[in-house]
Amino acid sequence: MSGSWGCPREIKGLCSKVKDLPCDPGMKGCVLYGRFAFSVDEKNSPAVKRKLKDKKTEKGQ
Ligand code: SF4
Image 1 (cartoon, rainbow, N blue to C red):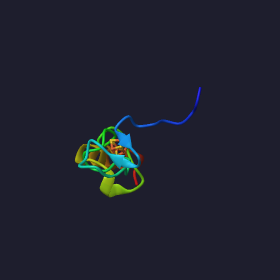
Image 2 (image 1 turned 90 degrees about the horizontal axis):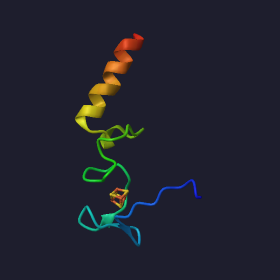
Image 3 (image 1 turned 30 degrees about the vertical axis):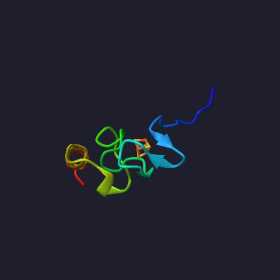
Image 4 (image 1 turned 60 degrees about the vertical axis):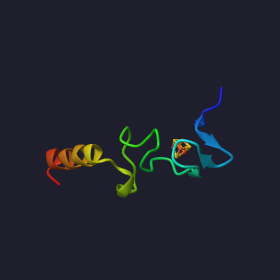
C-alpha cells in the first residue's frame, strides 16, 4: 500500500474539475478546498480561516 494520495480528477497534471487548470491542491474549486487548512492562507476557505482565527484566540495569541 502506498502512502501517497492521487487525485482522480488529475489527468496529466491538469485538473478536470477546475477548467483543466494545472493541478494545485487546495485551490478554489479543488476537492480539498474548505476541507483542510493550508499553509498558504489564500487557499483557505472563509470557514477554515475562521476556525484558524478561533484557535489562535483560544491560545491567547
Ligand atoms: S486541483 Fe484538486 S481537484 Fe484538481 S486535480 Fe488537483 S487535487 Fe484534484
